[in-house]
Amino acid sequence: MSRSLLIELHDRLTGDRRLERHELPVDIGKEPPSEHGIVLDAKYKTISRHHGTLSDENGRLIYRDCSSNGTLIGDTRLKGGRREVSSRDIIRIENYNLRIAEQKVVLIRQTLLDLHEIGESRMSQETSLVLRMTDHGPRLFAPEDQQREQSEDPQAPDEAETADAPDDRALAGFALDDGKLIIRVHDQTLVETFRINGADVHVNEASASLFDVVELAGQRFEYLEPGHHKIVCGNPSCHLLNDPPFTQNCKWCGHDLVASGSISRLVG
Image 1: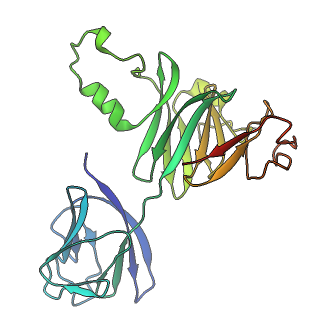
Image 2: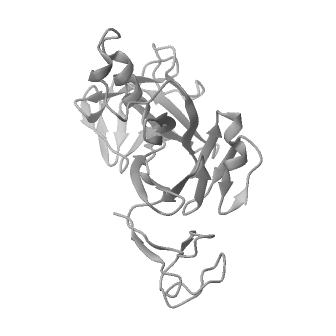
Image 3: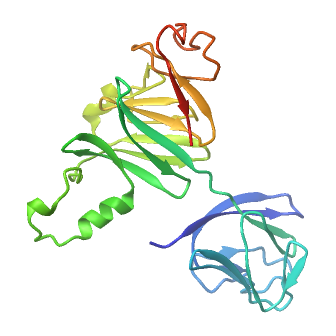
């Protein structure tokens, strides 16, 4: 699977900023040779038609300068050479600053409505998740998991399949967009089960904010960020997330967190 990057471009002269997502390798310049390259404004005289290329080499992000005038990375001028870069580096091409937008990793924790643990999945802006029906109920899968399943020999006997192998019916999709969790319900019959923080959604697409709880198809999905400590209200009609400490009432339903048997949720 090819790697993609979210790249921020800042024109220091005009103040214009934009974010672009590109598959690697990606060429950069006034007239980049690849069809889907990063196009920089032709009015800047020292930018070459093909100024540079970002590529993935065994998991390392490499910038190669292809220009006549060079590229400034941090305080170092690169001309005709290669250098490993990361989200900490600013790539300067005349009046442009290029920066790799850091990919924030979030956690989707899946439980039953009674808080019985199902599992958890990590995702970033580059990834998505699909909710599919399995022999054990709805489960989240990354697209590459489904691709591996489909790439197996179609003549393979049924007994070779795992108990959790998804069928062909996608119930919903989960994706990140600028910090929001976007949930798209594909199975229209499930819209009536779609809730965010206890409120009915009534449509087949909606967004959730960090630390919201999504209910769908008889499951709970907690939208979490690693490194945070949350408390799950023990009231069976609530089960929403609160900030510590326990010595307070639930901000959603008003129940005493200790008395209702709340759960401490430390996100790793």
